[in-house]
Amino acid sequence: NVDDVSCKSINCCVLSSLCVSTRWRLNIQQRCEFKKAARKPEGRKGEEELARARDPPRREGPYRDFGRLVKPMFFTVGFTGCAFGGAAVWQYESLKSRVQSYFDQVQADWLEKLRPKKRGDLRKDVNQWWHSLSEGQRTVTGIIALNVVVFCCWRIPSLQRTMIRYFTADPASKTLCSPLLLSSFSHYSLFHLVANMYVLWSFSSSAVSMLGREQFVAVYLSAGETPSLCSIMTILAAVCTKMPESKLAVIFLPMFTFTAGNALKSLVALDSLGLILGWRFFDHAAHLGGALFGIWYVLFGHELIWKKREPFVKIWHDFRTGGGRGGGTRGGAV
Image (cartoon, rainbow, N blue to C red; front, top):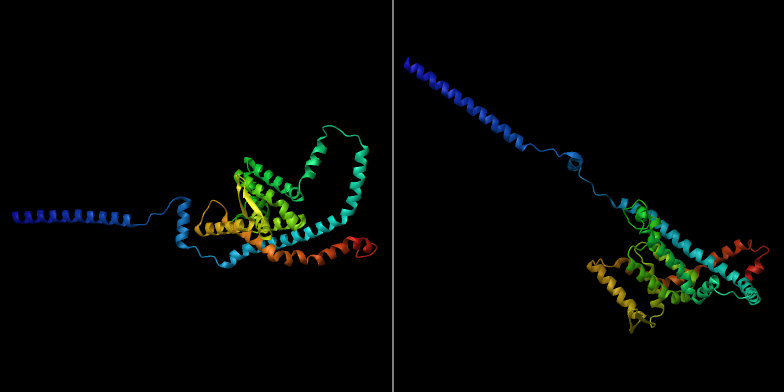
């Protein structure tokens, strides 16, 4: 009997120990399985991560990038053609009205002598100052004024979104065409504005006397509207290429002079080095592109574009004179 009791007690102990060990093993397995389960990321960020994990992003083909460039490319080509076409028409109208302006000026001078002179006439002083400027300086005055107005608009907080959208050339922006032109008049830094406008003012007389005001404006707008080109560098490079022996000097160091050809070579070398080394102080790509465009236009572009304007001017002449009916003699005299 004692042996039976002891056996039963031993069996109970063994069973209880087995139950406890089984429970412990189940708990351990549950805990391990819980730890190994993947945690689901929470929130919108987690959903994006899950979507990325399920559907990895596909590499977009080159046709999509090219599709975004088609519209700006056509806009650039069309605007450049309109700029040179408008310059040709502008020159035609200027030549046509020069004779009439001469007689009007003679009549105005005769009336000015008969009219009593006024003291402190502000309008007269402004006119005298305006006519004292060279033709190139008068041409770039409007460009400089427009750049100053855009610079002031950058300082207005309520216009920041508009300025960023339309006066910043960003390939990722939804607005692709108009910023190509408007960004050429945009300067956020005062130093950048003053430096560019000083260079434009300094080279304006030589550039306009070399190209004429109509062709100058067409080249300036075409270079500014073309992506990755700098209008100021285009004008500077054109003058230095056409007149390489001209003497130049730095504004703060007028005692040191150098030729325009050497200055252009130094600028091209500096921008090329900055582009290779990844310098960020200046937009070396735009400066280098503008310089190369100015060199190309003086060497080849003038002959290929401006010298071929006669057929278009003839079409405009026929349109203005009614196709030669009743106005051919007058148009031919011009």
